[in-house]
Length: 592
Ligand SMILES: Nc1ncnc2c1ncn2[C@@H]1O[C@H](COP(=O)(O)OP(=O)(O)OP(=O)(O)O)[C@@H](O)[C@H]1O
Image 1 (cartoon, protein in one colour):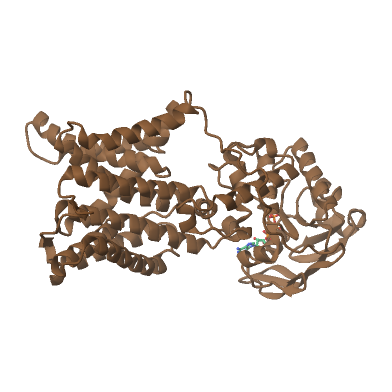
Image 2 (tube, rainbow, N blue to C red; image 1 turned 90 degrees about the vertical axis):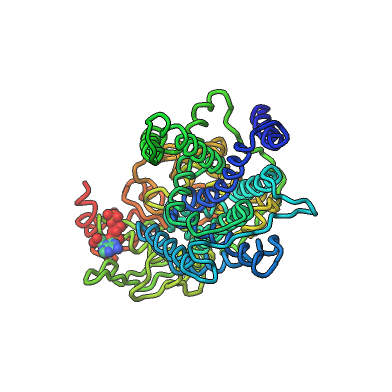
């Protein structure tokens, strides 16, 4: 534990002592650039590494910050500090516009769109008379802080690194918070996060804007360091380099941004110097060597240098475990629970057509509070589609769904979660590199309120304690408390499915929707799951269970709805269903 705190403290001390030590000016300049580049790469850690949104266009935002301060401080004599905020305001406006235009794109369309707007913004700057075209703007004033001129690289060094480390602190805090868990959920697609009540589009915009703002601050520092701006450092080529820096360091890790910026900057400069001397001729040979090194790194350390080095040192540094500081935390707000026997869910003639195929054909059933209802049927019978209609993943072609007396048909899964239905997934959806506890705490999203700024400034700790206390309570409820500090991705399938149930319970649902929870489980794991579900029923919870495993459903449910070819074949008690000749023909007959 001691070495975990000692090493960063030592690193910080060395970093802040460097300018007063006899370190050559060249290295101070290098470190200034590394700090500025790291700010941009930090934005990419959040946007690309964590959020899964690849951007080649961050250099354009560096340009917005640089040009705004250049223009305002040289033409209008405005203080560079005011210009910093003006630059950030411009950046936010441009980022919001671009986010609105591009962030709904997926796959390769988004990276292509970032290339397109990076080219356009750069071309616009380079061809605007007002901005000095390709010559840019010269004669920027040096920064001044409390009467102290930061003209000298050694003086500016402190400002650069205060910004860079403050950025790292903010991003690190954000990732370990309520909005941070929502952001970390983006990378695995939007369905699970939306089902936990997260507006995934909103968080995509948030990380896009934060990344743009970090780039803009870097541009402001860069402009006053160089004392001149021109379009070339903000071109697409630099946008690609920033992405390389993040990837080389480790695109999902905060300190990777610093490692990547440092390694690339130093290697590039040293190779530029060394290679022509070695080869005896001039040329940009460093580009070739860097390209080869990058390919080798992607092959042998694909997660980047920081995670690679962490893997090597894991033997000496014990894994960090979250301090258990939530004992006695206040409970999260809870919803009014339905009375036993109260009509909870009313599915009335729901229909879903995919083109000419009627996947669900006027299916109706009801669930009362305290019941476990099974929805079964052979492959392709329409169970998952019905489940998705109830949980808001699919829109209804016709029919009605009422929940606790109010219509919910047509609401999206976020709104459905707000009303008190929570679901699990046929294929487990989780954040593999987060602990079990953190995954479950994501379920408490709608019962808490800390926003991005509070999280970045770490003002959210009291609410975080409440969230973790609730997550631990739900894990205890299903008998998984002992595994709460494990990474979710390291669990076997059975515990992963139970973890999903704990996450759904953390939303404080009135109805739990389980999509094939026994699929792929071993016999013992099925027994453990059935035990948990029986216990939840005994506690008064209502459950809709879509399942393939007949034995599992028969021993657990109060009533069963059997579907075939999109229609409801029969509804009854497990005994009635088992005795039904139609079911035998349609389902059991084909199964046994
Ligand atoms: N998005 C879609 N587009 C077109 N057809 C679909 C879509 N989703 C499902 N279907 C079709 O609707 C029918 C019902 O599918 P559904 O997945 O609901 O069945 P199921 O009972 O859940 O089957 P399984 O047990 O195999 O998951 C199938 O014929 C399926 O091919």
